[in-house]
Length: 228
Image 1 (cartoon, one colour):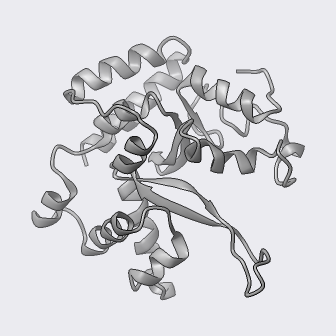
Image 2 (spheres, helix red, strand yellow):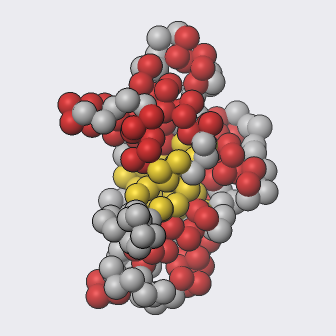
Image 3 (cartoon, rainbow, N blue to C red):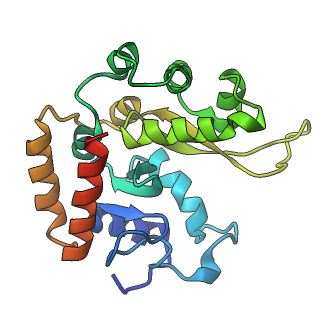
């Protein structure tokens, strides 16, 4: 997609057209939000700032947002996300995988905390999980990515850091919620398909606009994640 976009509405149309759009480029021969917008539009704090759109997409149900593929942030059109979730989700529920020793206790704990408090701020999540030490940061980050790559968790938006006077202070924080809850919140329909059926339907949709290189890359990544 060589055409540059300038508005949030145009970005929503691009996600609807392509189905899956990364935040920054990593899928070969495929557009990203970064590549279809002007560099000078980013981090201006204005309505035309693509950095701010990433909060609106999931909040308004336009797209699921998370590190679902290759640990990289991307947007998946709301209509397609149930299919992608079906493809990425292991056959067993997270609780079953934990009981079988396939999921770390820290990962399970993060899932439980988000389940208790949808939209939880990442700083609060790390605090409640007892993983605030620098030595535990990598484990915390990897657990969050694992939960997104299995489509158990997604990014629900961004929260502002405020001081005692209610004024913005410091960097915004990422917020998380369960993917199932996000699907229900935006009146999307979960799919009850086999992984093979979900894959056929998803790629039939993507083949309308994706390049051969991009499709090959995505097939490989989904296959690799499904074999974990």
